[in-house]
Amino acid sequence: MSLSSVPPFSFSHVGIFVTDVARMEDFYTRVLGFTVTDHGDLETPRGMVSLVFLSRDPREHHQLVLVSGRPPERGFNLINQISFRMAQFAGLRQMHQRLEHEAVQELSPVSHGNALSVYFRDPEGSRLEFFVDTPWYVAQPLRIPMDMTLTDAQLWSWAEAEARKAKGYKPLGEWQAAMARKMGQT
Image (cartoon, rainbow, N blue to C red):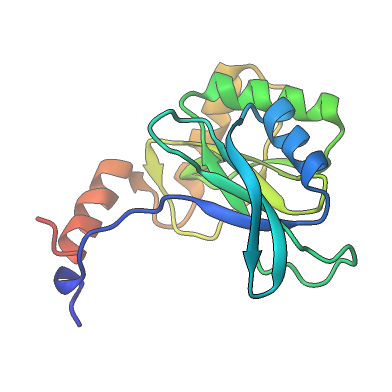
């Protein structure tokens, strides 16, 4: 099957199983600014579950769903990360400061060359990422620890210098044009 024969679609939302629905609802609303759009209980083949629907976009009924039923013992988590694109770097810096005050686990600011990211764990251990895109492409994976104490100008200068040293560096527009051709969208 060719790429052009697959109907177009885009990512919409993610649902995660949680142990303590109230604690997780508090974290995602109070710390990350989500709004509860709906909530309730539902009988499923696995038994009764509680669901909380959350969004930060009034055009989206839900971007995240918290679902009860996660066992309290920590087994292997199939979700590597849940990522959120920030509109501006100032917002990424603000979220980093907010997360420092919240004392979240594994707070880790990094540059991927093509994005500047802040990773952390929610109260039940799921890894989250906030990021802003950069105007560059570099081959992935790439992960360079980032110093959030630098000024914006210093940090962006450092990020560009690191990206220019990375394998495959090019302006993002060039990479996007090549991908559009590869995906048959030109």
